[in-house]
Length: 224
Image (cartoon, rainbow, N blue to C red; front, side, top):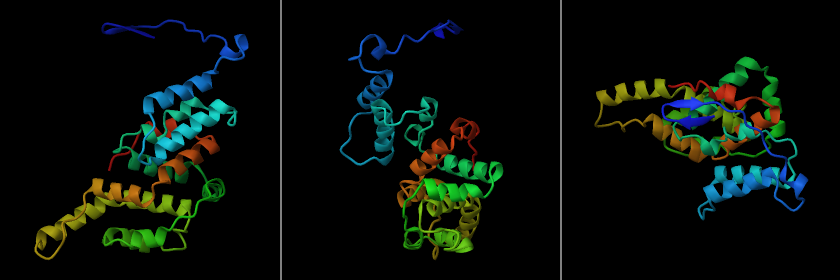
């Protein structure tokens, strides 16, 4: 597809042979893509989990460590999502799994994404009533101390934000002198990401390993 003024011209395009077939010393397409990604994204001094994960994926594909790799899924990596869409992606995935799959997806998640996470101490360790409210509704048996528990808590906290904000704002307006100004939706989302920085990566990895189309889930990001 070639752009030309206001119109687009569609053309047939063929990929050249794999470079290594003509020249064994030439970098493969995967190696070239990995180099391009590192050139564009650059190396950063500050830790960035999503960037590190993205570059780890491209490096694994380039080295041949990851033989079967769907580049189409990579465009839906959390690194490439705007910050406002990331919480919506978490909830959309949670909703999709609940509607399209049986409860066995939780067992699969635990087996595929093995990470210990301090859910209880993290969400109850801050002076924010909303997080303790969400946690206590289901309790420690539901929010287990692992990656799945962090994902479930994040999804439920995102779901209830609109109700919480509306209720908290009404109460605040009635008694501004004694009540703290309620958190905004953006502040809640930012805190969730700071609580569980691996959640987005874990969700992405799970979907890729399960072969679930992230594009299908991301087509209609819900708004709260």
